[in-house]
Amino acid sequence: MIVKGSAIGKMLGRPDPAVNAFLLHGRDEGRIREAAQALQLVLLGAVDDPFRLVRLNGEDLRADPVRLADEAQSLSMTGGNRVIRVQNISDAQTGAFETFFDNANATGHVIVEAGDLKKGSRLRKLFEAARNAAAMAFYEDNAQSLEEVIEAHLREAQLQIAPDALAYLTSVLGDDRGVTRQELAKLVIFMGEPAPDTRPAIISLADAQCVIGDGTAVTLDQICDAAFGGKRDELARELKRWSESGQNMIAPVRSATNHATRLQLLLAQLETGGDADTLVRRARPPVHFSRIAAVRMQLRYWNMAKIRQALQLLLEAEIHCKTTGYPDIAIAERVLYRIANAARA
Image 1 (cartoon, rainbow, N blue to C red):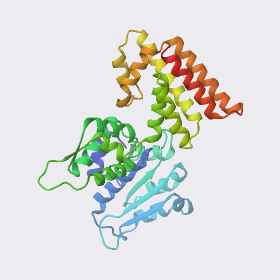
Image 2: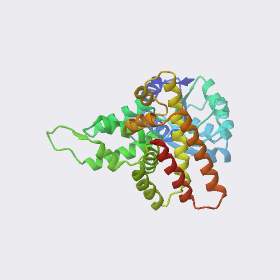
Image 3: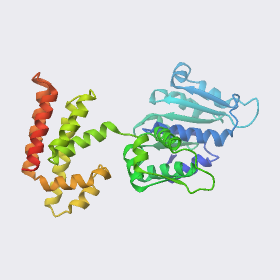
Image 4: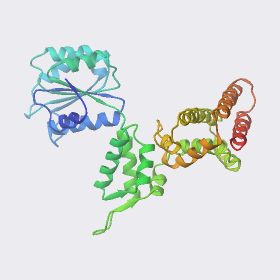
């Protein structure tokens, strides 16, 4: 069967007695690991009994395709449920799971951790069609679910978070649930133990940025905002920081190209009668909250004719970086200063 949405949490907390095989797949490895651990805890309890828990991987099943079925039909020496956790699995091991499902005596619980399986995946189809199996997909947190994870984690540590700090964290976290929890754990340690009988400490934006940085992205955004906002002095400082960090100078050119493309789309929407503030706040992918005012101002400086010219200059600059042999920094600085000049023209 396929389990989706809120039903996933219910299945992890109280598995269906008719289900003894669980396929956890998707792009978020951290959430998959969390789900597998949650199932193991429910099925085995807190005791990590080596007679009741077996760990296998894709290589084990490649070398011995019937081992999974054999392990699942073996009885525990200490009694109770027997759980087989199988990691690093792909379609290549589908045959081993077909043998498992064909064996009526394979009553042990199997927890499978796989990667991003497409809809046409043989392994995914096998689990989705089996009556005694549950297939659950785990993808990156969206803004709402990520906020819930962040607030719940901090609440357990008796901490609160300011709205702008929460918005910042949702913009730099979320690709992997495990990484998100690691970063939040660092933030909790940074804030320190709460004093007895005191109100929960409130995490500020400065606290969040101090512990959980996104320096590369922020610097590129600052370069773009300085260039398209016509701020030559600020652009000079940001380009100097970028160059001194040893980063590739093509990156600011590409980032500026992406930013110009976004401005072009917003300008086209403005021409249809949209409101600048609303358009910027509803843009997808989202504009970071700290940049909303800057992007809104840039829409006043640019029009469709100017932005098309800027895009042409940026595309030519990237080609020159790759083909002419001239220093990348000189090419990047020249085109970005031209854009800064054009912004206020």
